Each structure stands twice: as C-alpha cells, then as structure tokens.
Length: 148
Image (cartoon, rainbow, N blue to C red):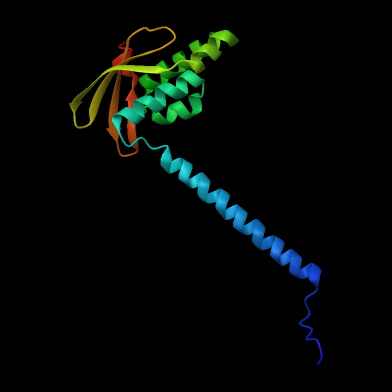
C-alpha cells in the first residue's frame, strides 16, 4: 500500500490550521466589540441617566458623551463639567471615582421625558437631571440641570 501524497506538507497544514484559529479568534473579538456597542444603548431613562453620571464620575467623558443629547448648549455645559473634573487633584478624582450615585426621586414627565433628583455619596449635593428618549436611546439634556 502506498501513501497518498496530496502536495500538502505538515508546515502547510499547520499554517492553514493556524490561520483558521486566528480567523475564528478575530471573529470572536469582532462580535464582542459589536455587542459592546449595542449594550451601551440606554434602553430606559434610568439607564441613560446612570450611565452618564457614572462615566462622568469616572472621568470617562468619551463614553459619557454618548449619553448626552446633542446640542451646542449641551456640548458647552458638558465641556465645562469635564474641565472642572480635571481641575480636581488626583485624590479628589479618585474619591469621585469611588463615590456612588444616590437617586432621590425619579419623575416621568411624559413618555419621552424623565427627570431625576440625585446626589453622589461624596459631596451629597442634590442635583437635577432631565433624560430624553431618542431613537439612539435615552440621553441626558443638561440644559434642564444648568439653565442659561
């Protein structure tokens, strides 16, 4: 009996196998990245407000901005909030990152607007926030909290 030679060497087979493993790994990473984007969409007013506040407290303004209702006024207020965060010393920022959100009251104004009264465990200063339903999920409207 003679061995069949199909023109494939062991190294060629290993390269093909390694390529397959790499391709499957790439697909797994790509699909997990896509899931992260979908998971970030705020499906409720509570989620939209909480995601925005948590990310601001962590200093992750790139993610917090995804939960901001787009408008020039909101952008100006948001820029001021982020600048204030970075004026804090290292210890102050660390304390804020470790603080928790305490929601005092949630009021549904209508099906697309909900207001929050909340504070964080660090400074315990009551604040108000409006969250608005959009096709991209619930977004924070800072104009309600910081009127001109």
